[in-house]
Each structure stands twice: as structure tokens, then as C-alpha cells.
Length: 217
Ligand code: B16
Ligand code: MG
Image 1: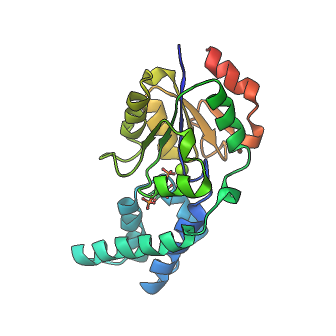
Image 2: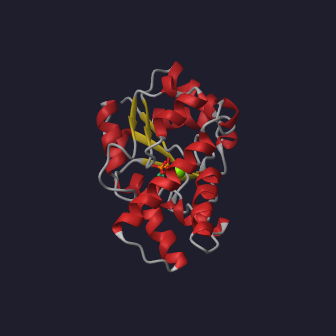
């Protein structure tokens, strides 16, 4: 049976978490409070709207709907400035090695990301052509840990969900993959991502023989 491979974007293919952090920190500072890197961990894999809700809870800031909408836009405009000059040098190590291995063997590849900026980022770093399907924050109504994003990706690839492998750096993303009955591979701290079926710190630790074993399963 053909296996499908689904990649999260932020924290798996590129390290955009640092740019999200700077943009949220700028907004927090403007609203008069601090936002730490530790707090930014809570934002991984979480939708933009939910991130702002959490940020305002941290700063104990009440917002009207109009202010909320304005700050969402403001953060994204700021974030877009940070990612404007991204290029292939920002692809995380050995991601192309795995993408090439899968492409050469004609395994369908999808993106499954919460970001509404996913497609332009893939274009900037030159990886867009690897992806047979892109499912992102523009296509889904339910955020991770809901499995919608990955189920839609499997459907677009034409692969059964239980034949999909998901690479994820966020707890919510691993949970989404598990509820979709997919094989979850945690990229990052195995203590944080303990619910994943397999764990690696990054792609440099993933041998192509491991991928081949998954394909043969
Ligand atoms: P945007 P992923 C997620 O991407 C990020 O991890 C999360 O921090 C961010 O808030 C979310 O995308 C929305 O991003 O503001 O660009 O729409 O990890 O699911 O690829
Ligand atoms: Mg992520």
C-alpha cells in the first residue's frame, strides 16, 4: 500500500517560530507587557486567533472585537516583514534529504500546517514543487489537535489516513496525527512530544532506512 507523508511547516521544515515570537513580543510590548520565549512554546501549532487570545490572557488585557481584529492584522503584517527575505538557507537541516528520498520513490507528499502563510513560505525557500497537496490555516475550520488538517491532506493525496506518516513539532499536532490514526513522528524534545509513535530531535537523526521501514510496514 502506498504511504503518504505529511509535513507540518513551522518547526519541522523551517524555524519560523523565532519570527512568530518576535512579532508577538512586539505586540505584547506595545500593549505594555513582556512575552517570553518560554511562553512562546504555548503558541506552537496553535492558530493565529488562539495565539492572540492566549497573549491577551498573559497580559491580562481586555479587548473589544475591533481591537482584537486590528491586533491580529498588526501581528501578521509585522511577521510578514520578518519572513520577507527568507530563502533556502532557512530550511532545517536534512529536510531536503527526506523530501528527495520520498519524491524519487513517488510517495505523495502534503503540507499540514496551521499557518495561513504556508504557501508563500514554501515558495520563498524553494520547496513548493515537492508538495502534491497543501492544507493549511486557509483550508481548515478546526485547529490542531483536531485531526481535520491531516485528514484533509490524506484525502487530497488519495491515501488512506492509516497509511499516512506525519512529521510534527507541536504537542497539538502529534495529538491531531494520533486521532487521525496516522503514524506520528515527533520532531523535537521527546519529553514534550512523548505521545508521538517515534521521536527525533531533527531530520539529521532520521536515516533513509527508517523511512524505508515505514514504507514497507
Ligand atoms: P500564521 P505550523 C503554526 O504553524 C505555528 O506553529 C503557530 O505558531 C502559528 O500561530 C500558526 O501556524 C498560524 O500561523 O499566523 O502564519 O497563520 O506549526 O502548524 O506549521
Ligand atoms: Mg509546527
